Image (cartoon, rainbow, N blue to C red; front, side, top):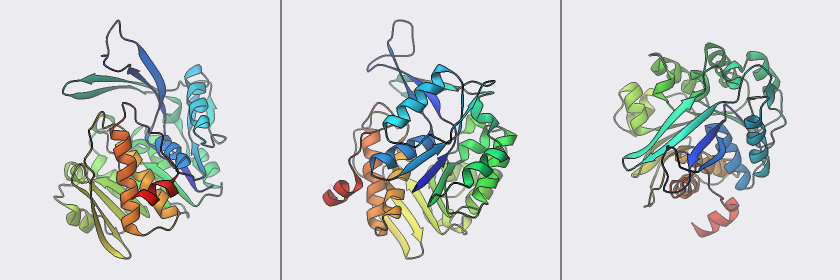
Length: 298
């Protein structure tokens, strides 16, 4: 496989267009998880992508597997847990932005173990993708994430800081995980909140060990620090519907270009393209064409 993505996926409960999280609204159920988003988008872009995690032995777990399978993601490594449930989160679209409510305590994925990591890491893949979310779920998953990024393979790490999941030690833990990874994605504002950095260059000064560092500055630009130098590509103008999932889409676009050995400017443009399509969607997924078609039109 090209990519093995590891991390929790929940079921997202979203009001239909124009609705709020209230009685009388109609709702859609779909999978939602940073790493599985990356896997599904990479599959749409034409790559062989797998997702590994733990799900409850419940109908919500079935929904996640069925949906990701339809997108072409290999889900054969997923472990089903008969004692713990599949997690759920709810979106509440408001005029001031979408609020999100998580119900993931004690979920099946919060019990991902070192044994799981050993099994999944033994599978042949060109690179493994994980995010900081997994490290925040429990002490057990934190150790599992450390083992994953310190393994022998090529690791892509999205910082993906979720403040509501942490208890004060996020800056230290996420810094260590990023420094131990080969490819790192982080938002400029996210890095500022975590580590007090002010711009892409100060992020690079702090995160000096990853071979590739991509700093996303929302609607302004993306900056990458690579063995070939520093590269900057402005963000596209987009009519934003929902920001959730845009970072995952950017990572998928960039990783697609990396896997296809495209030049760095094209990788960043692919990232912007995928992120823009998700920003224009009410969900955290977009039905992307193959990467070859996108690149032909860039």
